[in-house]
Image (cartoon, rainbow over all chains, first blue to last red; front, side, top):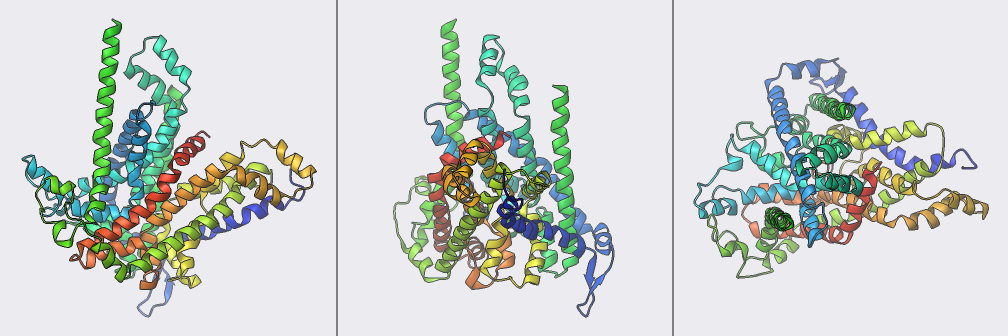
Length: 288
Length: 282
């Protein structure tokens, strides 16, 4: 449609330049930087896969990889499930339903840093109102972030508090896009609520669910602020997630090669997980 | 029979609303408590610490002292930094990303598919994963501790390009041809015809970019550590770790950050839900 061939490229240029410089170049830097190291004199030298081999033999790395994977195996399905429940609850129009939709989204405006600060105070073993409430209803106070057994589950609950409403919107959009005729036909056939969910809603929701699961996984693999603000990886390394390890390598131990190697590992894991999750949803399509 | 159905559906409605109310309370109460606590006198905040009662929810003594306290410190500067960085990101981001969305929706050109796949890939790839290599890049550019380091990486956004493309693709192409015949150039068409139509998408994109930039913590922590460039989130987190004595100031600064984000959120959330629905319908 354009008369001159370069017109579309002019419209694209600023955005593509930004993506190239600030998204794709850093990936290149991570790949290249991870095979370099510094000598004692501060010169940069090529050292092949040494940074990766060092990671392989480093129990700290393995422990934080294990924690990150455990955290993700719980937090992602949990958040997608809760988001779907919320979306189903606010799907049908009804009195005040808009108020509930907005209320569920509202924690979006509380930044991850403030979420961390706020919940650290709310869950404080002695000062916190949550423990005050537990005592009030006759339950023992809980250590939450101060206990190696409870810190990771508490972290999962806190990030879900902030995140679930955000993911709900995407699933709600998917639910609202399901043609009304399908539900009406189901009503006429006297289909049970469970059957309707299993054979109409779920198959129609495959795409939004896949999108939310992939995006949620990517977001949670990179969780940093609560670990930095609240736990510093503790207690007993129970919340030592990979992103925090990468940050510490770069800024506490000034080992950029190691940090970039960890960044590359994170990017690879996210890519593989995303491909796996997308495949999971595609094969189901074949059987339906 | 009909009575049974009616009463069971009435029961379902009651249960549904009971669930909605419980969830809303759990989600909103912490924010309510944060904002209420910011108006409590310092000695009152944890006066009934560890106990739970009506005082936990309703402050009987109110004061603005905490807000006066934060005005004296580095907080106004951090607030300005965050506002400036967020507004610049939104303004430049709307321009740059809508132009790209326009190109993808309106023109056919070589490598269009490849470039669009690159855009989609860039939004599948989360920003935090590249914070450390991006820091290495910024150091080479000499941009560490500048506003440019805070603003530039967030301007081009794959998801915003995608949202604009989705919207622009709905506009019938005949109107562009008519305008071309009338002698309008492509910039005029983009500027005077297409952009004014797209304001609900622009509103959603602004909200997304604003909240994202306002929330930013990891990148500003790494890229702009000097006191002059500290953004609001980093300032709040530092107060938390360094001087736990002044809880009142911590609550007041965190409440300010939440309330500032709340204003565009409440104004624009309607368009947000609508546009996400449009975007998900690929």
